[in-house]
Length: 636
Image 1: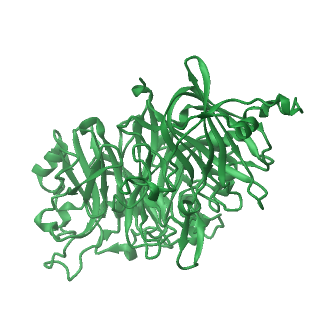
Image 2 (image 1 turned 180 degrees about the vertical axis):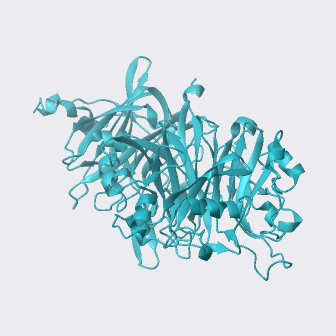
């Protein structure tokens, strides 16, 4: 801490502002003593005494990078059973972590039998724990080696497999569905009825491991009356690979209210399908449904179009590569949310959409722009710091007594070749919007994709994101832009879109915009011990602030009010812009801003700060304010 001093100019302007409307004489200005606060802002790490220290303190902050490599991540919260989060990725490998920050690699988690040992394309594993059997089930697809007795040089490209383990770390062993002992291992009592009879139609040595009975699958498709003229699904003769339906990206789901089991997958390339499971080895084909059709809001719209009718199509799917894949299901307030990826994973435009339905098997409707249909993306190419964010899973963490919904997804680590991918995490918020039918509808919004420093999740830590303690905000002096609101800075939502979902973003994720120098005061619900603060900037250089002035923390000390001051917290251009070698231009990084970390401040009850409009600009915007503090359970 620096010594106490009177910050006359700064605090005079800051603390007397509510009185300016009623007083014109300078003598009425209120002066208050303040202690200037020493802080670190993450922008000058080269000046640190220890050059090996990271440029952000990972006890207080986190950042999405490339540390956890892999694609198509499934994040399993296994903390209640062994204290770890598990990340399973393509290649059938896994890593585990206790805090989502420090990861240890576990290597392969599947023991393939000799028949499948030389398999390739070990894609998109998802693992679920079943309380009934107390076993873990892994679902994935692979390309088996050809059985030369029955076929030539190539086997089906996508063979769906289920494997079972008693531990999240494995080893998971694929189930031979014709082997009574292996079926018993997977199901336990009553297994006998689910041992599959070998089929003369599928005599290959790998056929016993095919989770989906292809003959039953194709029969269910035909009974559903689905058209395949656009090859939106691949069940017709033209889409069947050696007698095996082309299926990838299997996602198991247990309805939290009914306990019923479901399985979803991509009928690659253009549709998501689902079925109710009798158990994890046995689909009930009478329940089979096609749930999405690429390019269309509903399957009904797709079929209408096939019959010559005109329907509205989904813009984002129209301009992306033809694909619906990577499904994942969530239930919230009685509604079912089917989320899935669109586009080609090798392209920067790869992203995640959401659809809503009233049952686990739909029908589902893809959400519109006004409902935030495009959940995660590179913003139609406008986000130059992120490429191909997609193929995701959701999970919940409980920190400081609050359940937070999180999304795990992969993104390209090379923004020019789109070759490598890494796993990243961001927070998801539920936002109530006006639905397409005019009724209130909860939809998901991702605070991301981010690549700059963000408040720590705080899992297993003393400090973390305590922004939920921000109760209210007041404009003390200045002027907001027409239609803007100070409350936008503490609603918990910030935007990483400037082109996508603008009908939603402008109404539900807008920044607070000022048109002249303006001072705000945030009241906290209760006094907090704070260690850091973050101001999220605009996603446009035309409305970005250059600094936040007179950041004052109002504390209670020994029954008296004391103020600690950061006179100016500068926004680092270098830390918040990315250079594009192709266009030879710098672009602002979405979700960035300026932050400060400092020694512990006790009993902070309010925060004041001033936003100025930079010279040459008409306005300046602050998207959100976040604070890092000590969790309630660790308060002294």
